Image: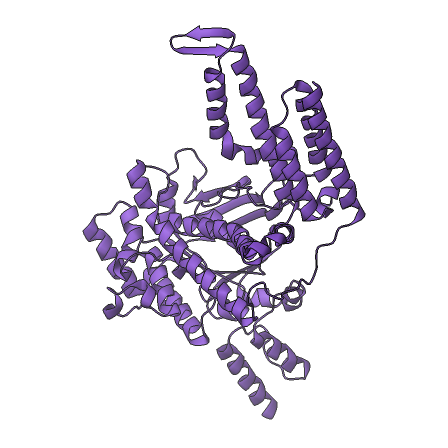
Length: 266
Length: 285
C-alpha cells in the first residue's frame, strides 16, 4: 500500500556512485543543481543531459525506480509549466480569449520542466545511492565549520539521521495499523473530505502513540549508552576520501566549467 | 463452510532489488470448526498467508474461495468478508484508539453498519467472551496492563461475530501467566462460540497442547500439515529449519533411547505422564 514512497530510500547496488564519499556526492549535487539554472542554450541542456545520463547509468539504479519519485512533483511541474507557457510575453503562436501562448513561453515552459525533472533525478541519484547515515555523516563533516558560529552541527545531523531512519519505520507502522483497522471494517477511501478526515482518527491516534513510544524508547536507549551530544565524540568509521573521490571532484569541476563556458560563449 | 486456497503465490516488491517470493504455490483447505496452528520461523510467510485469508493482501496468482465463492471476483464484498474472517494482528493492543474500552470494541460492529444498540450488544458479548472484568469496560484502554489490552483488542475483532478467528502471535510479549490465560481463553472461545480458530505462532509449546491440526511453514511453502503428533514425529527435520518440537517430544525420545518403552508421539504433558507411568508399571512387573 504505502511501499511506493521513494523519498529517502536507499537502493542497494554495487556501483562506483555507491562507493563515493558522501561529501563528494553532496558537492557534485550542489554544482549540478547550480548548473541546471545557468544554461540558456540547447548546448548547455545537452551537456547537462549527458552528465545526468552518465550518472544514472553508473549508479546501476533502474531508471524506472527513479522516475517513480517524480510522481510526487507532477502537480508542481504542471503549475510551473502552465505559468511559463501562458505568462511569457513574446511572439504569439496561439491566442484564445484571454490566453495566449508565445513561442518564448513554449520554450521556457519546456526548459523549466526539464530543469525540475533533472533537479529531482539528480538529487535522487544521491539519496538512492547513499544510506541515510552516510548522508548525514557527510553533511555533518562538510558543515563542521559552522560550529564556529555556534550552530550545533552534530545535533542537527543526529536529528536528521533519526528522522530519516524513522521514515520507513513509521511508514511500515502506518501500513500495519491501517491493515488492522481495515480488518475491523474501517474504510479509509470513500466519503467526502470531512468524513475521510474523521475516518483517519483510528489510524492517527495509534500512530501518534506509537511514535511517542518509539521516541521515548530511543531516547532511553541513547542515554543508556551515554550519549551526550557531539562534544568529544569520535567516529568508528571516519569518512575518508579516496582516489575515486578526487577523480569525481575533477570531473564535476570540468563539467561545471563546461557549463559556464557554454553559457558565456553560446 | 470452508476456506480454500488454490495454488496461491505472492511476490513482494516485484521487479526491484527487494523482490521476495513470500508464498510459493500454497494450496490448503480450512474446514469449518477446525482449530489450526500455523507455525513457522520469522519470515516463513505465515503472516503473509493469513492476510490473504481476509483479502488484505491480494495474491499475485492463484485463487481463494470462501464458502465456495471466489473472493477475487469483481464485486465480491471484501468488507463483509473481513467481518466473517476476523484477523487479530500481532500486538493488537497497538491499534486501540477510542476513549473507552467499550467504544473501541464497538468500532468493528459499527463499521458493519449495525445500529448503536446492536453494536453495543455485540461489544458486550465480545468483552464477556474474552473474560474482561466489567468494571474496566468504561476505562481508557491505555490504562490497562499488556494482557488486558490484548483481550480488548481480541474482543474488538470478536465483536464482528466472525466465523473464522485468526490470531497472529497472540502471546507475543506476554509473561507465562498472561500467555496461558490468553490461550485458555482462545480454546474456550473455540469451544463455546463454535468458530474456526487459526493460531499463528513460532512457539511449538504454545500450539501443541491446543490445536487439532498443525501447518508448518518454511520459506513460503507448507512443509508439514497434519495432526500435531504426526508433525512432531519429524522433529529432526523441524530442527533443521530452526523450529523445534515441544520439550515433551525430546524427553520421550530420550527415554525410548534409554530403554523405556514409552509412546514417543505424546505431545502434551498429560499424555507423557500417562505413558511414562504405564511404561514403568510394565517394567516393574
